[in-house]
Length: 100
Image 1: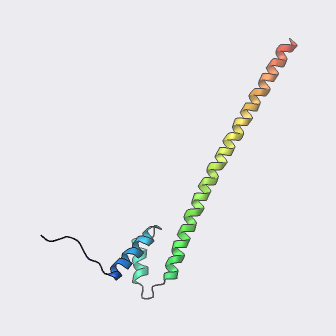
Image 2 (image 1 turned 30 degrees about the horizontal axis):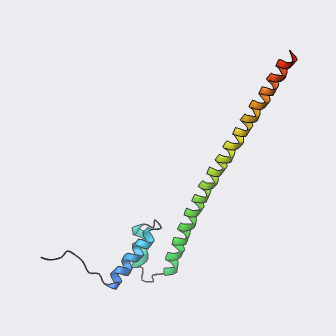
Image 3 (image 1 turned 30 degrees about the vertical axis):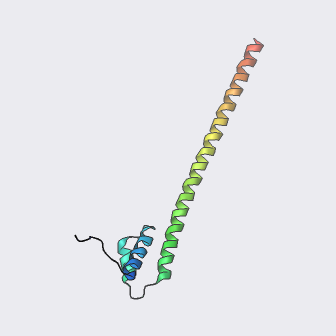
């Protein structure tokens, strides 16, 4: 009975770890391959790419949060305006009824 397990050396595991790490930042496999096959593998370049991706993701998320908060504030403001309008309308109707 033979096992179907594969044994990987440290170099293969390091490569796999780098690929997974880069994929976490949605860097394409093509770009990862290009960088990793580069004779002058620039780890700082990889980190800068990952940082740029993180910053873009964070910025998009913070903009969505801000828009959601603004919608909530706008909704609350409109609700207060409608409530105020209804109160003033009732007061006007009551004054008319009292004056008659």
